[in-house]
Length: 170
Image (cartoon, rainbow, N blue to C red; front, side):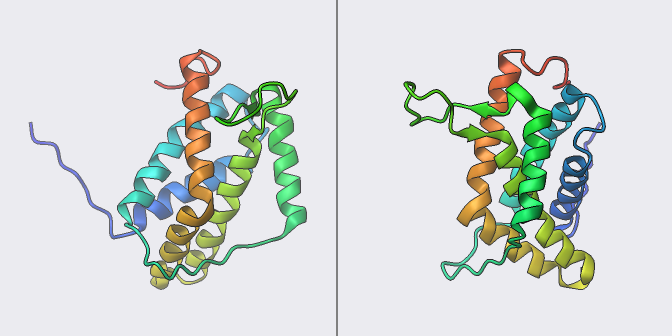
């Protein structure tokens, strides 16, 4: 049997997965942690694949983002409290003599969320100009939130492989 692959218009998969991720982040604390983390674990690779499909940006990157520090801090705090002991993780160059790891899933999720939400809000204001949201997502990915995405994916993979997120990969 032949497999049919539906191709969405350029950027529509990114809009779809961004909407799902933002919704999931906004639901923090409304469901059991492992269910929520399982969903996030499945969404991040889809975001990564979708942004990669949009291609690279030119060298003259232009990027805008929201900087409401109170909103960012509020979300970060909610995520950090919800994740509890699963929030912090050791980064490659952390000094193991330090008491605390420098990586934080709450920080990663917060930065990814606000970058994606900014583009989604622009898209929702004017869906005919999806290229503006795409350009902003791509520029932000290469300048900032892409590293958070890779770090979060790596940490979630580690948690799954060590069975710290149990049944939620299936």
